Image (cartoon, rainbow, N blue to C red; front, top):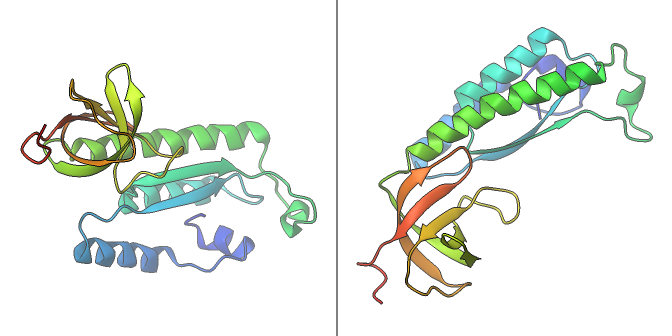
Length: 183
């Protein structure tokens, strides 16, 4: 939920940034196609500019595939409500937007590396451009989609092979791999 040792300790969360980065590298060595996701909190009471910069640095080095971010908000009965140095709401929002901009750039770069790859996707529905689908890395109603441009009739709920032809910050664009999906 953060990368700063001080903030993680305040959150009563285990974790060590360097060990986590080592694990991520090892996981990627074992399984290069792994999709790693996490969520983070910005604006936790006591979070300094240095803590936040450490989080942004971690985000860049870890280059996670799917990331969510939330601003800290007081929850009834939480010990953190009484912590010193609450982060002003305007600063929480600024940090949230900076965090999401950084992650958007990371996501754009990672998804663009998929262009030319062949993936098996699960078709979910029809769209104006053809069909929408999900890859193994996409959680329903959370992550981006794979947009398949095809005139062929596909069945929602079935798997198809596609070739990735384009990408943006969250979605992939594909054509049907006709060699793997005979009409």
